Image (cartoon, rainbow, N blue to C red):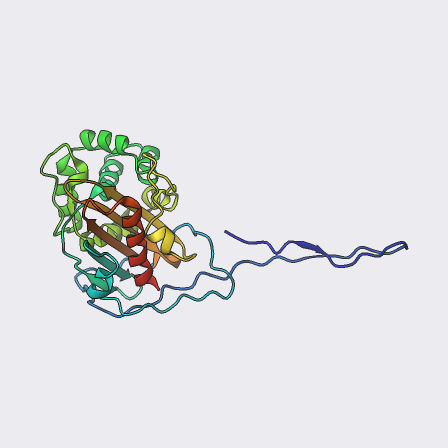
Length: 293
């Protein structure tokens, strides 16, 4: 989003023959700054770097002129745990340019996926020649009705097993109840791998949808927590997840941040039912802020 400085009247002569001088000036907001590098916790060397040639996500509002991202405090499990008291958090910040994770906390811990499994559903539908506009609507609005229809039409649990094998997902499992796609099990490391695959092989329809994520999901839930609220003007594209209560509350944010989608960001959280969605959403945003600086 660009800001115009406006058109200013710089000369005005009163009561005599004169000229009106109008000078127009146009400037753009400062280019979004790169995400601040945080302390390396692990390189996650098993995750290959994604191609740098993939399309850049749609920019969110630009940084104000002169704004520079702050350097984050030490980002480790203890630091993130303090932001999610009584709950559990897993987080990965993967720098595609460096081919390494600069933050990795409990990357292999399993969680209920909620709507993050829609990324796999989207891959299955597009691979099967399904309707791209409806896939995009399912992703950008997190439309559960479309997800259920696609889940049934394109193989149900086999979507998860087939794409886990294809992408190399080591901690992703189909739901115990075949009809409950949102109960698919995932890990932060596997979500990073999904984004790596999408960026390398299927960026078009999927990334366009993630760039166009609406502030409210189809169920009315505000899905700009986490990455969108914490990005600080950097470009982003996201897929969010939320669910409750079997028996806990899940709130997840995932996507790419920065110019050319340089950073893959994944934060998965699990809270007791006593933590409401508003509080849980703020916690996820605080975790992303700590990771990005």
